[in-house]
Amino acid sequence: MKPETILQNITVSKNGESEEAYERIDRYHEKSIEKLSGLYEGVIQEIGEDPTREGLLKTPERVAKAIQFLTHGYSLDPAEILKSAMFKEEYRQMVLVKEIELYSMCEHHMLPFFGKAYVAYIPDGQIVGLSKIPRVVDAYARRLQVQERLTYQIRDCIQETLRPLGVAVVIEAQHMCMQMRGVQKQNSVTTTSAFTGEFLKENTRNEFISLISSDLNK
Image (cartoon, rainbow, N blue to C red; front, side):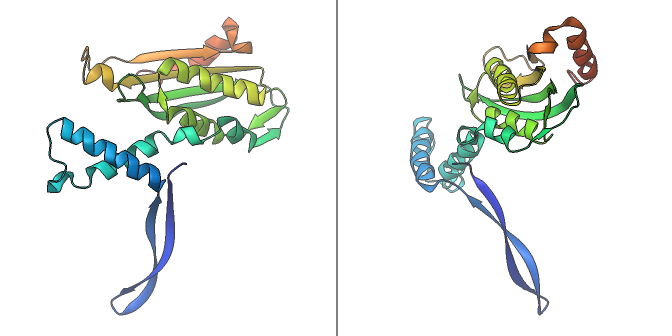
């Protein structure tokens, strides 16, 4: 279940007068939060901390909610996201969505990696609402991932659902498992790419790379 944040309309009293305001309510899968909280409390104890001290008293629940949010992509269907906003259109030139912010978690160490995705496709009678492409990126990113698989999952979903003439995906990301631990190289950046159809042709791929190259490695 994807965690939800809703704004509830409430009436508050201010200076003797009533006025409308909004209250934020976060909804999570409560049984999952309860189970995860117990597990994280055990982790805190195992590393030598006291989960009953004031600063850590609510930490297991906070971490449980955080991990549920960070992995809510498992409850999303990326293909259905695209299908919800597909339209007939005869446009047959490149459509490029640049600099899509991306946050994910390395499946080997459960540490974050983050960066930008660049996604392009060439329609073949169908286009998709532009906001749906970043949503597809998020649906796959919000899972335990490796960057290589994330890249081709985005490509394949768009190719198989929209059936365009070609798809191009480039991801550039920094990995905390390389920067905080292990090799500890602070400025390392990883770039992955995946192409189908027309983007396998050198001239089309070069056009795509030219359009995004000024943004890479900023």
